[in-house]
Amino acid sequence: MKRPSMSLPRLVATAGAVALFLGRPAPADAQVFTDVLPGAKTGGSRNIHVLGHVPLDSVGKTSDITIEQELSRPYVYTGHRLIPSGVDIISIKDPARPKIIWSWRIENAELHRGAGSLNPMYLKSRGRYYLTDAFQFQQGGPDVDLGAVVWDVTGLPDTSKIKELARIREPEFPGGFHESYSYKHSNGEALLFTQTSGPWADVWDIDKVVSGGDAGHGQVGRVPIPAYDLAARPTGGYHDFYVAYDIANHRDVFYGAGAGGYYVYDVTDLQNPKLLTSLTGIAGVTGGHTIMAEPTGRYIWTETEYQYAPLRVFDLKPGLDGTVKTISRPIGAWTADWRDLSHNFEIRWPYVFVSGYEDGLQVVNTMDPTNPYTVGYYYTCECPHNQGLEFPPGNHTIFNGAWGVQVRNADGLIVISDLQTGFWAFKMDGFDGWNGHQWGMPNVSSAQDWDNGPEGAPKPQKVS
Figure 1 (cartoon, helix red, strand yellow):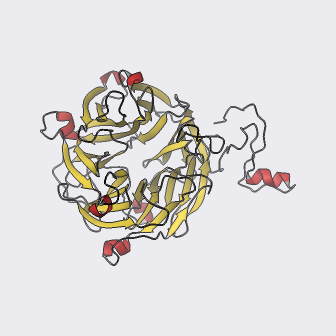
Figure 2 (spheres, rainbow, N blue to C red; figure 1 turned 120 degrees about the vertical axis):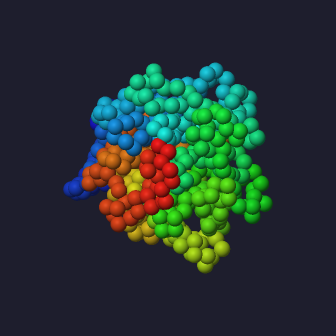
């Protein structure tokens, strides 16, 4: 899809542009673009193709994204932050013509304070499909204890059948949920893990949440931050997390990023999580932001939310084997541009798909975790450097551009949510879907098998 031209002609200093300036032939994979804002990155590598784009009501308002994995349900969910806070459903039945089919905004939106809508997720249980969206509202307005809203979206594409079922609240620790993660546990339960302002992550059984009759409002577990870190930061908690099944050891594993670093727990027994290893004392890291493991659970990718920080890669084996008390040194690192910061990512080994703020979509080969390298990219933001969200007011930052990324395993469709430019759908040459077995790996990723549960897990009674 060709982007409309802007009014300030300028030759971008890509590899092709530099070659032309020097009077040399351009590299075969180079692209030369004109008519862009000064200092903005534009275009992409020739192996990445734009399928569709919806601008949305962006201007810093589009937050995270998730995509349903079944081809028969071609729906993408994006968060709409700030005022008015809410969520949008985008149909990608024809990825070349994506369209918004439903939007919801919280009541009395102008009275609310804070970031608001941040993190849509979806779950399936007992034949029903649920959309959840995490919210963070601040003091000075309503809903400061609201963590998430839950809708039944089973009837899509008929949007008249969408029904709000529940609101998850956390009055003990107001401030809502910054992040959430949906997971099909080996016990058969469809779970939502949520960040809180307390020193733990809460775990919710979606069936109990929507039933409305559970005395605990559907909360079935809590994963703590280790106490020795709380002594230094008593209010510290998690930022976000990843949960996956460990086929080799037959256990459900929680990977958390938060105060002090990163933590790995066995959460097979949700009432008694067991710390398996930690990553602390890492140079340049006082708190973890994002974490995800490759299919075997040995290597993890992590992010720390400050400018110039690379994505770091760690080998968990010494910690899981008990040969070290904590892991403090990465074995590899990657960055799209040392001046910037990458945000979220999805692992489909050997690829890592990154939403890189100013650097848009980036695709990284991690076959050798000590030497990851870029294999594809597309700049979705086209924004000048260091002109993003202001922290504090008047201080512009690199927090601009691509926020979230998701991958549909069935066909390899890649979707991006961009703070400024909205929704994007991409395809990468040679990536037409993902199953770990094709690479000699466990078939483990963020895509859940809601009907059958984790691969390799003992089969509980079928619940969906």
